[in-house]
Length: 255
Image 1 (cartoon, rainbow, N blue to C red):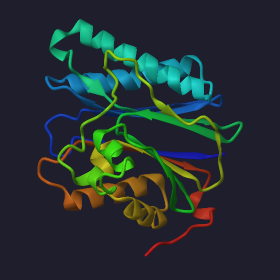
Image 2: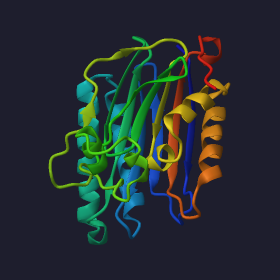
Image 3: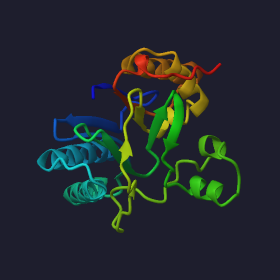
């Protein structure tokens, strides 16, 4: 099954890009990761790069597409951030999110997991099939019925996280336990909050339906983001993974 990959990562209206992303592919297994760092004094930049480097290197050493693999990768990435904190006291408060997607090309299945508010989306027929749930204060409030989903994009406390890499407490990533069988035309996107806060899901679907390539779709998402962005808007990053040839798949065009 052919995979088309596109990557986008920009500083936005900030002087430093504290997002990081990357991927590693082989016939045995494929791994994509997006991380959003925070902490000041350059710490967010260091934390996110450490997360991506740790996850990709560890997966390359043992490219098994299993739920336990994702949990281990994120746990080891947390250890890597803690080591960076200990090595540089000025960065002891740095933290980072992680969103990880694994695909087994031989078995045509996918697994994913995350910690924090960097998201993973799955699309089928140009509609959102699933999206990860943020480890944030506002997500917990919405889940408990204290407001609607709009608060995730608008509330002043929307970026307060309940879990992140770099915490001395044990990390407990959300990991899908059942592999998803892939179909031609399936699309995945991993992204930081700088992108999903600015582009709502119906717009993601509409732009996907009008795109002919993964790179073109990310460019359309970026244009939508920039059309409404404040001068000091956040870093934004995304990885798009198109499975098979979406142009040949049944597509639902939304108005």
